[in-house]
Every structure is written in C-alpha cells, then in structure tokens.
Length: 362
Image (spheres, rainbow, N blue to C red):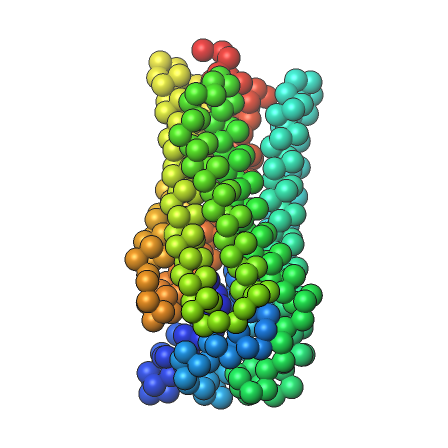
C-alpha cells in the first residue's frame, strides 16, 4: 500500500511500546504530523476494504492514539496552509524579480514564457494539493468524527463518498505533476544551455519519460484501491505491493533525471568558462543552487527508493513509513522552491541569460 495509507494502521503495531513510554508516544505523534503534512491521505472507498486492514492487524486503536490521529490531521492541515502562504510569498517575489531583470529585453519571449509558465504550473499543482488535503478534513472530522472510536471501529465505518475518492485521486495526481513539471523545467534549461542539441538529453529524457509513466501507473493502481471493483484481501495486498514497487522505481527515475540534467548543466558552464574566471563568477549562484538542491533531492530519492524496493512484507512497509514520511516532507518543498531559487539568479547582471551566454557567446 502507499505509505500514508499504511501509516495510519502502523500505530496499533507500536501500541505496546507507545503505552509504556511517553516519549515514544510523542515521537509517533510527530511522525504522523509530518506525514499528514505532505498530504498523502491515501484511503480506500469502501467499508469492506477498510475492514480488511483491521482484519490483517487484528488490533484496535488505543483511545489516546485515536486522539493523536484526529488532532494530527487537523493541526498539520492548518500548518500546511501556513506553509503554502509562505510558498505563495516566495513565488510572487520570484516572478517579480525575474520580470524586473528581464525588463527592457525584447528577445527570449518564448524562454521567459516557458520558465514563468512552468513555475506557475508548479504553484497551481501545489495549490490543488493543499486544497485536497484541507477538504479531506470533512470526512475525517465530520462524517466519521462523531466519536473517537468511529474512526477505528470496523463495525461502525460508513463508506467514503465518491467525492472523497475524487479528492484522494487529485491528492495523488498533484504531487506527480509537481515532480514532472520541475524535471521538465530542469531538462529544458539543460537543453537550452547545451546549445539546443537534443542528443545530449537522450539519457536524462529517457528517465524523465519513465518518471511520467511510473507516475501514471501509481495513480492508476491507487484508483483501484480508492474505487475497488473487488474487496478481496489477496487482490488488495497484491495492489499494495505493486504500488510500493512503482514508488521505488519512480524515486529512482526522478533521482537519475535530476542528477544527470544537473551534471550536464554544471559541466557545460564549467567547460565554457574555464578560461574566463571573471565570467564564471556570474554563474556561482546558479551552480551552488543547482548542485546543492540536486544532491539533497537525489539523496532523498535514493533513500526512499531503497526503502520501497527492499520492502516486501506488510510489517516492513509499516516500519519504513516512519522514515519515508520525513524524507518526502523535505523533498516535496525542496522540489517546489529549487526552481524558483534558480530563476532568481538565472540572468546575469548585464541582462543576458546564462543559457544564451554559454550556448551562443563562446
């Protein structure tokens, strides 16, 4: 199953430890808080499918953990709205700085349109993502929130509505769009810096295509869980393991596309400015941003890929979510802010873009 879907049901397995140790209980609370922050609220749409989860673990939630879950869902949704407000401020500032640097330049309208359009699409996908998480509070706190036990009692669970399932699907699609748009912008910059030579991007573009295909596959299999045609235990287990494997492949392809494109850009700038040390200083900020963000993001993806690929048993899936959710949290916001930080320094002080100067002047 997807990490968020299993994270909710991993708490009973840790019940004994959490009840014995208050520190462990608080630790699990923050793990749930971080995971709900990224919004992977993966749910199944039928009561029978939800009962299947409880039959597997054959445990009930302690009341204190139910309160932690309910409070965590509400608190982190509020936190996500505040973070989105900060993201909005950064986005508006970046667009303003970018257009101010481009003021008076009559060429490169297509380039400016692609950069601003990609950043705007990233912002829009993130807005959809945040909205779906906020709207998801309705079934949690209102429909199923009449009592604490109604969230965890398999005899008193009403099925999720069709609208709730649609929200979950949108919540799964939006992050995939964010990854694809950010990688597209990076690959486009790579192609532009390298003099628009398509053969340079053959390998990173292949990983980019694989990333899109795996993202579509993940959403498709997730839809099979949200709107299952059957509630067979073996079928749902099989679908859950497939999703975990797809996520592992998605992390690998994303890491490879990002790291290869970053390497090509940095190498191109380094080679073309080898004999122009004064010019190289103009690109220091871009090189720093690209290298630091790409290395950090790639490291997150590699670790998450390892956690997904080596996971085969249900208990392993549950235990790896405590690591996975913290990594995804940092990775998602890094992927949103990285392209905008690069755009702020994309132009040199003389008004000529980095890509134009490297690919055309030398």
